[in-house]
Image (cartoon, rainbow, N blue to C red; front, side, top):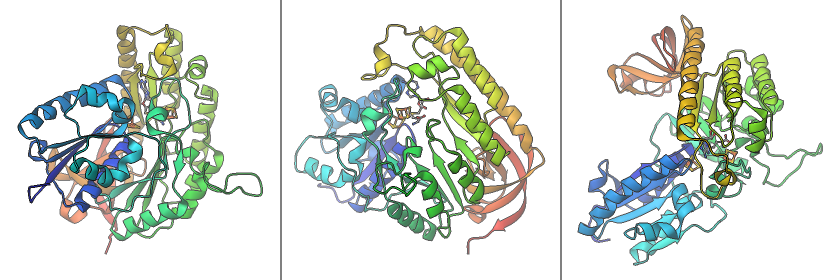
Length: 453
Ligand code: SAH
Ligand code: SF4
Ligand code: F3S
């Protein structure tokens, strides 16, 4: 620690959990006196917060890392950190692959960044990947947005889907207490945040590890109870949550979403496959019939609800017919959005060593066919917005057209309209939709429904 002005840069890969972790780590670095540098080449501390969900995500990390490792030879004071899921998966092996690294830290250690960096500045090369009890974050995250914020409610995952690395790299489920979650949301409300997304890899598992059982034998703390507990936090106008697991999704939760006005009518419930035999080999714990029933119930309570999901094509042994069952489910449900991926064998997962792997050609052909269907269906789903007036929470300027601002509807559709970001940021505006595309809308403002001060 020699220079007076020290700068840091964080590059984040992967899911919302990683983005939330990065915001907390940035907060810790700022507390330590570091300043953000947009250009990684000007930074004294470089942190890669990494993802290993598929092989291409992991390879991307190595190519970024290679460039900075080279720079370290000219600039020995550079501190190089790999955090997140690749760090957890590879641990010490990463040091052998990239000896220039100063710190390798798993996701459970994100809140310990200051301690770990101190050890580095004391001259050590540090690997922190042992499982720990995640300590409450006492620092202030440096959040990317001033309007929408993520709040972790449960870390880790206790499922064992046969394709997935997450349980290996994120560890066992650890719920935060309802009080800690509410306190964080109240602070966000005071700071002017309008929307909170509650986060968990399997958010329906929330509370299972907390003490307390009701007289009926139900866990006292469930996601549903949490929504009732936090929905009146002053200032927070919208509440979202992700990711839901069909195995645990309850009608009680659906009812709460319908009842609580701040809870947005958008549900992200990955189904992964539309075929029961494949679902069984994935160890997902539900059938496509059950999935359909969940969506039907959601639509009974909230006919306009948006439904999104994740799906995998080319799982080991998936036949053409089984893949067509996925296409059929997508067509029948009518998703507003779908994240699709070709199956990627991951180290340490059961399906990776099965001998019925499919060829890359088959996987990419199926992926293309599914993506084509998704775009068609999303475009159809967008039609329903035409001419309607939707409430949009303004988040930012449209990067492609500075005369426009952009935000999201309750149902999470990205919406553009003409306006000045300085005046509209963080406001809820009624917008009449005049143009629809598969994944976004354009409209004209009708009136300002909410003005913060
Ligand atoms: N917890 C969530 C999602 C976790 S990972 C759930 O249970 O649904 C995000 C998505 O990545 C998954 O939904 C899945 O569609 C995809 N994914 C996970 N492992 C994968 C693999 N090995 N190959 C391809 N896609 C994968
Ligand atoms: Fe992975 Fe399954 Fe856990 Fe989701 S529920 S994170 S897919 S193991
Ligand atoms: Fe990737 Fe880790 Fe998230 S593997 S998807 S960053 S939990």
